[in-house]
Image (cartoon, rainbow, N blue to C red; front, side, top):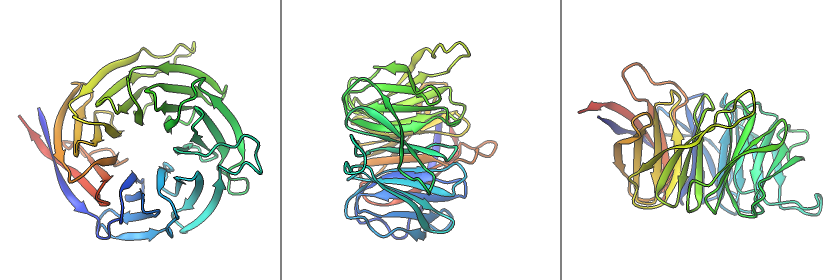
Length: 324
C-alpha cells in the first residue's frame, strides 16, 4: 500500500535561514524556530505570520509547545531559553543557562522540552545530563534536578513522554536514555544506533519511542513501563530507506504513521505496523523538522503534518488518499 500526500500550503514570509524546529499546536497554528534567530507563529489556513519574536543574535535550535497550544518554549545556540505566551504574545520567562555566576556548574542547554504539566522543563547539555528547570514565570530557569546518564556525550534531543512522567534523552554517540521524573532514576538505556541520534518521538500512549539517526535509520523502541518497574523490550523495528542522516521524526496522534525528514532532501511517511515506507516526498533541501497535526485524522484519511528545513519555508502536507 502507498499513501499520497500533497503540499497543501506554504508559508508566505519564509525565514531568511534554515528552520531547525517546527510544531503544530492544538490551536491549529504552526510555530517555527530558525537559524535566523527568529521564532514565528503561522496561521495554518492562510500561511501568514500571526505573531513573531524579535530576532536573537544567534540561531534558535530547539522548540517545544505546550499540549494546549498556549505556550512555546525555545532555546538559542548560546543556551538562552525563553517561554513565550502565544495568546498574549509576551515572553513570560527568560533564562541564561550558561551563566555560571549565579549557579555553580551551570550547563548551557541545547535541546529543551516543556513538561506537558507545564510546571517544569528539561534541557540537555554537553555533559550528558538532563537538567530540570522551573517553568513557573516567577522562578523560571531555577534548576530543580540533574538527571545523569553516565555518558559524557553531548545531548542532542530531549522529549517528555505525553503524560509528563518520563523524559527521553539522545546523544551524539547514538545512545538513548529514559528517566523517571518522580524518582529521578535512569530506567532504560538503548544503544540501537551506531551514530548520533538527532530526534526522538513518543507515541501518544507513551508505549513507543521512535529514534532518528545519522546512521540513516529510524528505530522503533518498546518503552512501556510496567507496574513492577520492568522496562519494555527495547528495539522492535528498524525503518530503512533514507540515503543520508535522518534529522527529524514525529508520530501521528493515532499512532499508525510516522514522518521523517532527512539530509537526503526527502520526507518519508512510514506505516508503523507494516514497518514500511508508504510515501516519499521530495524537498528542495535538507528537512530539519517534521511535526504531525495533534488533531486525530478524519475517518478514511491519513492526517496532516508540517515540515521546515534548509530553504526556510514552513510547508503543510495533507493526505490525498491511498494507492495500491
